Amino acid sequence: MNEREAEIVICRCEEVTLGEIREWIDRGYQTFDELKRVLRVGMGPCQGRGCREIILRELSVKTGKPVSEIHPGTFRPPSKPVKLSLLASGGDT
Amino acid sequence: MTLKRTADVVVIGAGIQGCSIAYNLAKSGIKDIVVLERSTICSGSTGRCGAGIRAQWGTEMNCRFGLAAIEKFEQLHKELEMDCGLHQGGYLVVAFKESEFEHLKESIRLQNRLGIHTRTVSYDEAREICPGLSAEDAVGFTFHDRDGHADPFLTTFAYMEAARRLGVEFQRFTEVRGIKNEAGKITGVDTNRGQIDAPVVVNAAGGHSQHIARMAGVTIPNSSERHEILITEPVEPGVCPPMLISFSGNFYIQQRPNGSMIGGCSPEGHPQDYSLGVTWDFLESMSRTFVKLLPRTRDVRVVRQWSGLYNMTPDCQPILCEADEVKGFFLSCGYSGHGFMFGPISGELLAQLILGQEPRIPIEMLHYSRFEKGELLVEPAVV
Image (cartoon, rainbow over all chains, first blue to last red; front, side):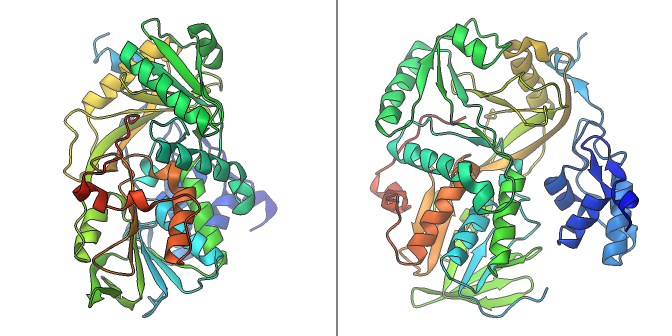
């Protein structure tokens, strides 16, 4: 991996680079959820919409398993960020 | 990684307790330690918790544990050679009832006597500590500036990485199915990947610790309650610098170093079905708490909600001991929602007990026999 490749930002919400992701995969953090916990990838407002597929491909390369066999990690509600005031109103605007 | 067939110590559970115990044992020279985790590291209650650390407690035992834990957290990044995300913005405790405020003031006297510099603060001062706070209906506030929060993931991983460097083995996706004992002594564990012979087994299984205890023939009165929690998108720092908490108001709210805010409360009905689901009711009621207490958060968006298990005991204090019935079987469980913050100190104390040393803070009152004897140490300050 050259320097320019290492600096590519994969998770834009939490500003995590390809270099960091590969480093932690090499250290044994070989599921999406483990990388999420140590690097916060997928924890920002987009909830992994931007980075999940790329990270699963990185895990696939490292583990030799096809992406279809790699657990995509946990998906949590709400599916889109919702304002506290809207939730507090019980949905009545 | 193949599973070894023998070990000096088997630790069940790779949350903060298991990782801290393994690290402290390895640091003391025990080399052959295996930590078994049925999922991945920090996947249970530790990784789901509200991350708070406090010394503002209502019992002497918890005050001692809380202060000792804060002292550990303050130097942990050096000891473990990894950032643990410590943020000491204090705990601002909000009382909404006169009787509650009287209890808090009584606790302050206890805390002050033990070297914890908690004090009462006025509403104006509370608003300086937590700008944007709206709590006209509060009766009083207490504050301790060394309280705060840390990152549960980074702290647990820091312990795991440090333990690994000392030779500890971590086995993920390994579920304990049985515990072997002969003539009142532990002889090993049975897992989905084979057996391990060991003279010492530690139960640090969090929400499932009562099941693990039963496998060893030990009955503890723990139960596991589902508690819910949410996190917002990151906003500018300074919206909620302290951990804002109320026992009568039933909430805690904090702002992570990156700006996102976390909030949780004690659930209605105290669900005990071991499921980790989430509810709309929580989302709605917690959001109401946010906008009432911190009106400026109205337009902040919730990004995620999840839940975790509080491993409850009848007095909301942990079980930290060796079993009477089965020698070599140690328990560190029942933290009742405070396992993360106590992890650094409880791990050290249990390691001392396992090594046959005198724990530097007395723990004999934390034996589960207290429940049968009726010697409960009821902790009032729990959300």
